[in-house]
Image 1: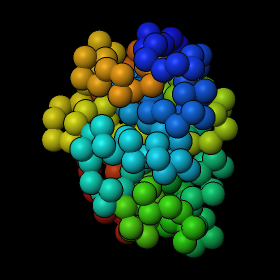
Image 2: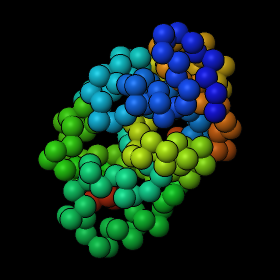
Image 3: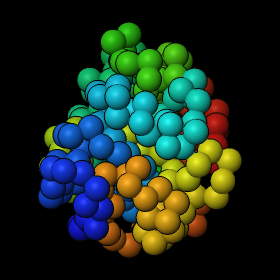
Image 4: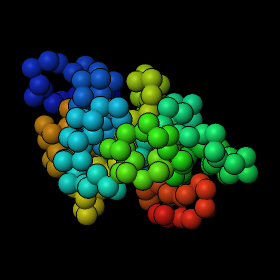
Amino acid sequence: MSNDNKADAVAIETPESALQAGEVICYPTEAIYGLGCDPDNQDAVTKLLTIKSRPIEKGLILIADNYGQCLPYVDDNIIPMDKRADIFSSWPGAITWLLPAKVSTPHWLTGGHDTIAIRVTSHPIVKQLCQRFGKPIVSTSANVTGQTPVVSLLEARRQFGSQVGYYVEGELGGNTTPSVIKNAMTGQVIRG
Protein backbone atom coordinates (compact mmCIF):
# COMPACT_ATOMS: atom_id res chain seq x y z
CA MET A 1 0.00 0.00 0.00
CA SER A 2 1.38 3.38 -0.88
CA ASN A 3 0.43 6.98 -1.18
CA ASP A 4 1.72 9.49 -3.69
CA ASN A 5 -0.73 12.21 -2.64
CA LYS A 6 1.21 14.74 -0.58
CA ALA A 7 -1.45 17.47 -0.69
CA ASP A 8 -2.12 17.50 3.05
CA ALA A 9 0.15 19.26 5.52
CA VAL A 10 -0.04 16.22 7.79
CA ALA A 11 1.51 13.16 6.18
CA ILE A 12 -0.91 10.29 5.77
CA GLU A 13 1.19 7.15 6.22
CA THR A 14 -1.41 4.38 5.88
CA PRO A 15 -4.92 3.96 4.51
CA GLU A 16 -6.12 3.42 8.07
CA SER A 17 -4.68 6.78 9.17
CA ALA A 18 -6.36 8.41 6.16
CA LEU A 19 -9.69 6.89 7.22
CA GLN A 20 -9.17 8.04 10.81
CA ALA A 21 -8.39 11.55 9.51
CA GLY A 22 -11.73 11.69 7.67
CA GLU A 23 -10.23 11.21 4.22
CA VAL A 24 -11.68 9.32 1.27
CA ILE A 25 -9.50 6.46 0.05
CA CYS A 26 -9.36 4.59 -3.26
CA TYR A 27 -8.67 0.85 -3.14
CA PRO A 28 -8.95 -2.33 -5.23
CA THR A 29 -11.96 -4.62 -4.79
CA GLU A 30 -13.07 -7.89 -6.34
CA ALA A 31 -13.96 -6.24 -9.69
CA ILE A 32 -13.20 -2.50 -9.79
CA TYR A 33 -11.56 0.21 -7.73
CA GLY A 34 -13.67 1.54 -4.91
CA LEU A 35 -13.92 4.75 -2.96
CA GLY A 36 -14.32 4.42 0.77
CA CYS A 37 -14.34 6.26 4.06
CA ASP A 38 -15.19 5.88 7.74
CA PRO A 39 -18.93 5.11 7.89
CA ASP A 40 -19.29 6.86 11.24
CA ASN A 41 -17.80 10.15 10.01
CA GLN A 42 -20.61 12.16 8.42
CA ASP A 43 -18.19 14.73 6.98
CA ALA A 44 -16.15 11.98 5.30
CA VAL A 45 -19.29 10.39 3.84
CA THR A 46 -20.48 13.80 2.60
CA LYS A 47 -17.09 14.34 0.96
CA LEU A 48 -17.32 10.93 -0.75
CA LEU A 49 -20.85 11.66 -1.99
CA THR A 50 -19.69 15.03 -3.32
CA ILE A 51 -16.73 13.47 -5.18
CA LYS A 52 -19.11 10.99 -6.83
CA SER A 53 -22.00 13.43 -7.34
CA ARG A 54 -24.09 10.70 -5.70
CA PRO A 55 -27.42 11.47 -4.05
CA ILE A 56 -27.52 10.57 -0.35
CA GLU A 57 -30.91 8.88 -0.90
CA LYS A 58 -29.28 5.99 -2.78
CA GLY A 59 -27.58 4.71 0.38
CA LEU A 60 -24.13 3.16 0.54
CA ILE A 61 -22.51 -0.25 0.93
CA LEU A 62 -20.42 -1.20 3.93
CA ILE A 63 -17.63 -3.66 3.17
CA ALA A 64 -16.12 -5.66 6.03
CA ASP A 65 -13.64 -8.36 6.94
CA ASN A 66 -16.33 -10.29 8.82
CA TYR A 67 -20.00 -10.01 9.67
CA GLY A 68 -19.26 -9.16 13.30
CA GLN A 69 -17.83 -5.81 12.17
CA CYS A 70 -21.26 -4.94 10.74
CA LEU A 71 -23.35 -5.69 13.83
CA PRO A 72 -23.37 -2.05 15.04
CA TYR A 73 -25.34 -1.19 11.87
CA VAL A 74 -27.53 -4.29 11.36
CA ASP A 75 -30.69 -5.23 13.26
CA ASP A 76 -29.47 -8.82 13.39
CA ASN A 77 -32.22 -10.10 15.67
CA ILE A 78 -34.93 -9.85 13.02
CA ILE A 79 -33.12 -11.82 10.29
CA PRO A 80 -34.83 -15.23 10.10
CA MET A 81 -32.67 -18.34 10.44
CA ASP A 82 -33.54 -19.57 6.94
CA LYS A 83 -32.28 -16.28 5.44
CA ARG A 84 -29.03 -16.48 7.41
CA ALA A 85 -27.97 -19.64 5.56
CA ASP A 86 -28.21 -17.84 2.21
CA ILE A 87 -26.37 -14.80 3.50
CA PHE A 88 -23.53 -16.51 5.31
CA SER A 89 -22.93 -19.14 2.63
CA SER A 90 -22.30 -16.35 0.10
CA TRP A 91 -19.54 -14.70 2.16
CA PRO A 92 -16.79 -13.89 1.86
CA GLY A 93 -17.47 -12.91 -1.70
CA ALA A 94 -18.94 -10.44 -4.14
CA ILE A 95 -22.54 -10.55 -2.94
CA THR A 96 -23.94 -7.53 -1.13
CA TRP A 97 -27.02 -8.07 1.01
CA LEU A 98 -29.59 -5.47 2.03
CA LEU A 99 -30.10 -6.26 5.71
CA PRO A 100 -32.43 -4.66 8.25
CA ALA A 101 -30.74 -1.54 9.63
CA LYS A 102 -30.73 -0.63 13.28
CA VAL A 103 -32.74 2.49 14.03
CA SER A 104 -29.45 4.06 15.16
CA THR A 105 -27.73 3.47 11.80
CA PRO A 106 -26.98 6.90 10.31
CA HIS A 107 -29.21 8.10 7.49
CA TRP A 108 -26.12 9.05 5.49
CA LEU A 109 -25.43 5.31 5.16
CA THR A 110 -28.97 4.02 4.61
CA GLY A 111 -30.21 6.86 2.43
CA GLY A 112 -33.22 6.99 4.73
CA HIS A 113 -34.18 3.37 3.98
CA ASP A 114 -34.77 0.74 6.67
CA THR A 115 -31.99 -1.46 5.24
CA ILE A 116 -28.20 -1.27 5.09
CA ALA A 117 -26.12 -2.79 2.29
CA ILE A 118 -23.44 -5.15 3.66
CA ARG A 119 -20.70 -7.19 1.97
CA VAL A 120 -18.05 -9.37 3.59
CA THR A 121 -15.17 -9.15 1.16
CA SER A 122 -12.91 -11.87 -0.14
CA HIS A 123 -10.32 -9.36 -1.39
CA PRO A 124 -7.18 -9.79 0.74
CA ILE A 125 -6.18 -6.11 0.69
CA VAL A 126 -9.65 -4.93 1.72
CA LYS A 127 -9.90 -7.66 4.39
CA GLN A 128 -6.58 -6.49 5.86
CA LEU A 129 -7.65 -2.85 5.64
CA CYS A 130 -10.88 -3.53 7.57
CA GLN A 131 -8.99 -5.64 10.13
CA ARG A 132 -6.51 -2.83 10.77
CA PHE A 133 -9.21 -0.14 10.81
CA GLY A 134 -11.28 -2.26 13.19
CA LYS A 135 -14.60 -1.82 11.43
CA PRO A 136 -16.19 -1.81 7.99
CA ILE A 137 -15.63 0.97 5.50
CA VAL A 138 -18.01 2.60 3.05
CA SER A 139 -17.56 1.01 -0.37
CA THR A 140 -18.77 2.52 -3.62
CA SER A 141 -17.44 2.35 -7.15
CA ALA A 142 -14.62 4.73 -8.03
CA ASN A 143 -16.40 6.89 -10.57
CA VAL A 144 -18.60 9.92 -10.88
CA THR A 145 -22.21 8.70 -10.78
CA GLY A 146 -23.32 7.65 -14.25
CA GLN A 147 -19.79 7.17 -15.58
CA THR A 148 -17.84 3.94 -15.99
CA PRO A 149 -16.00 2.80 -12.82
CA VAL A 150 -12.22 3.00 -13.00
CA VAL A 151 -10.25 -0.23 -13.28
CA SER A 152 -6.75 1.12 -12.71
CA LEU A 153 -5.11 3.25 -10.06
CA LEU A 154 -3.75 5.54 -12.79
CA GLU A 155 -7.31 6.20 -14.01
CA ALA A 156 -8.41 6.85 -10.43
CA ARG A 157 -5.60 9.34 -9.82
CA ARG A 158 -6.41 11.14 -13.07
CA GLN A 159 -10.12 11.34 -12.24
CA PHE A 160 -9.97 12.22 -8.54
CA GLY A 161 -6.51 13.72 -7.89
CA SER A 162 -6.18 15.27 -4.45
CA GLN A 163 -9.89 14.80 -3.66
CA VAL A 164 -8.85 11.32 -2.53
CA GLY A 165 -6.58 11.29 0.50
CA TYR A 166 -4.95 7.90 -0.09
CA TYR A 167 -4.61 5.52 -3.04
CA VAL A 168 -4.14 1.87 -2.08
CA GLU A 169 -2.08 -0.09 -4.59
CA GLY A 170 -3.02 -3.65 -5.42
CA GLU A 171 -4.56 -5.95 -7.96
CA LEU A 172 -8.27 -6.23 -8.62
CA GLY A 173 -9.85 -9.52 -7.58
CA GLY A 174 -10.60 -10.79 -11.07
CA ASN A 175 -14.40 -10.48 -11.12
CA THR A 176 -15.73 -8.87 -14.29
CA THR A 177 -18.79 -7.18 -12.78
CA PRO A 178 -19.50 -5.31 -9.53
CA SER A 179 -21.13 -7.19 -6.67
CA VAL A 180 -24.63 -8.58 -6.94
CA ILE A 181 -27.01 -6.83 -4.52
CA LYS A 182 -29.87 -8.85 -3.01
CA ASN A 183 -32.53 -8.05 -0.44
CA ALA A 184 -32.01 -10.62 2.32
CA MET A 185 -35.60 -10.54 3.52
CA THR A 186 -37.33 -10.86 0.13
CA GLY A 187 -34.66 -12.49 -2.05
CA GLN A 188 -35.17 -9.77 -4.67
CA VAL A 189 -32.10 -9.08 -6.83
CA ILE A 190 -31.52 -5.31 -6.81
CA ARG A 191 -28.39 -5.39 -9.00
CA GLY A 192 -27.14 -8.45 -10.71
